[in-house]
Amino acid sequence: MSRDRLSVVVTRRLPEAVETRLSELFDVRLREDDAQMTREELVEAVKTADVLVPTITDQIDAGLIARAGERLKLIANYGAGVDHIDVSTARQRGVLVCNTPGVLTDDTADMTMALILAVTRRIPEGLAVMQKGDWAGWAPTAFLGGRISGRRLGILGMGRIGQAVARRAAAFGMQVHYHNRKRVHPDTEEALEATYWESLDQMVARMDVISINCPSTPSTFHLMNARRLKLMKPSAVIVNTSRGEVIDENALTRMLRAGEIAGAGLDVYEHGTNINPRLRAQNNVVLLPHMGSATLEGRIEMGEKVIINIKTFEDGHRPPDQVLPSML
Image (cartoon, rainbow, N blue to C red):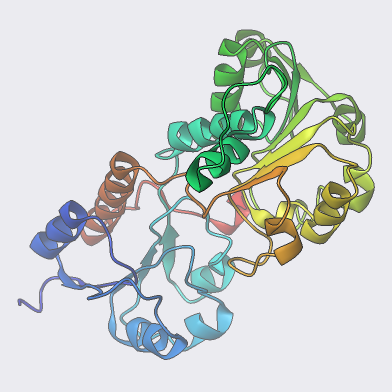
């Protein structure tokens, strides 16, 4: 391959269409399997590449960036969240960071509604009975869930995804409420028919469903801590398709086991794949393996954004999705 082309290292397997296009444009090193890169492999990548294409499973911290070679000039993250990347250190080293925002909004909002329905209508319990072959037939009082129409939904984080959840929830007849770092524009609020709560505590205490849709920042770590979870009504449920560490998972598990919260739907977890076995054992909990953004269309669009960011950088311009420390 020509040495004039940018050297690009991709840390995980990507959809075939994305890998093919990357190979056409750049001197790219792809993964042969989908195993997560070891620390040693990441060190080798940042030492030798012009561009690194990591995912959320790669910790691109200050220590790793410090070992980067002179060639590394761009970290083109495959994903919107960049809390796994030390953006400030990268900038100090002259390495640009970019991401893929906005692509997965609808996919994640769809999954949020799926979790709300799954928890309130007890779908996994019904599936389990059918898979075991234990169904004895219809009965008037079997698997009674709750109707979501008319319920109050409290959205924590009214960015792109939060607003997409609000539109879907309204179509299901839910009453939309929200708490956000900044109140959204009055026109947006009116269009969504959403009620703003300055006090998160007051909102949490009055909602039937809480949806976590805020990013992971130091200020959102354990935002739903034990004290705040205890404010929820015993009949309320909580769903999270954002970042696991926003909820104190141990506190949530204790309250679910004690019947102090009616249910939970989780697609993300505080400690990654290390999920509390007591949480997994609860029949009022729906757990998914971080599937919120898992659509083929979304994954290909993410790849297209990565390619545009790299190509724009190669052409001497600022990548359209550059992330700055001040944005975090």
